[in-house]
Length: 310
Image (tube, rainbow, N blue to C red; front, side, top):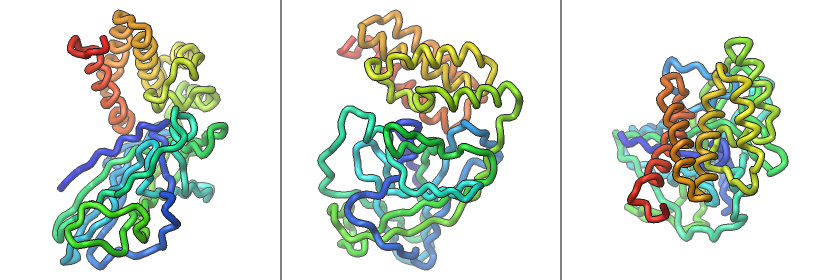
């Protein structure tokens, strides 16, 4: 089995649920024997404000190979997976953009000339991991994907080219596609478990820079000049809440970035040490840890004496 980790580097993993712009794909059905499922880690309790890690599993018992477009949600790129979420109040989230498209330094990217294919031989299966937490449809209106407690229903749609050459590893952009949906996954999101977490969550939702708590990599010292102060104050007021670790990791990372620009290596080390402290927290939810580990590794590399920019 192959497992692919798809890390959302756009804000809050920014669930990145946007259809690609090659024309609206028609709806199709999976071949007999092909099963597309979503799953979450067994025994995991998700609370409001926790990012969710979802595994997309594609199993093939059809007797023939099954190919689809590599599901991707990279910033400034074609989105080749579409998620569909139905909230407890029946509100639906279908096409969710990456904040990076609106808030990043680049508005338009040249489209790729080809899209990669994933081929699953008969009798095999493959997996892809995604982190879901935030919807950023426009710059001025950010929306939490899981804003209330209760049961959410989640589906994912893969893109499958209608025709392509046998053995092909990619298809041209503009190729006619159909979408094939996964089975529906029910996810229960619990309210914050205690009074201090409820108070912290309520305040977190009101922060101007709440989205940076979940995607520190989006921090820009010039554009988000008040973020460290705002989120640092939140940490001080809610040190013992479950959300303090998320916020503390951002503060450490943001200080690292700020001091990196100022070539203050001592400050960079302090920011790194704070992130390292958070990474040692055993209770850190898997979805947040998945994102944090990537940034942690990047910071470690940038601190290395071999780094030419230092």
